[in-house]
Amino acid sequence: MTIEGMMCGHCTGRVQKALEAVEGVSAVTMSLEDKTATVELGAGVTDETLTAAVAEAGYEVKGIQEK
Image 1 (tube, rainbow, N blue to C red):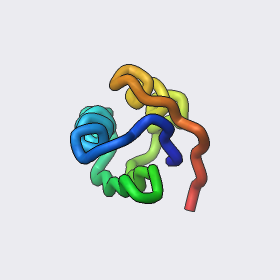
Image 2 (cartoon, rainbow, N blue to C red):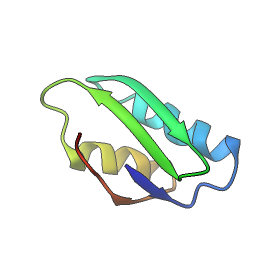
Image 3 (tube, rainbow, N blue to C red):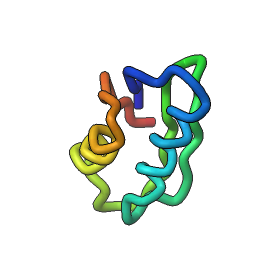
Image 4 (tube, rainbow, N blue to C red):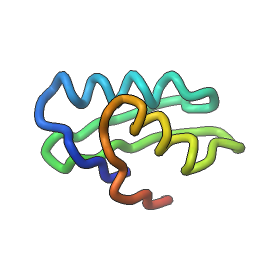
């Protein structure tokens, strides 16, 4: 996920905590430098759910790329 608005370690911590709270998310790896979050998740977790969690934390998802 590419996330707009993260400026510091506190920001990435907020986003990570929000994503980890989503049911079905097993791991989150943040990169402040790249402004990304790599999310490992189970079946049934939608892009919309992840985007809503990030938005609720006060940040904007610019894109989601599946691997």
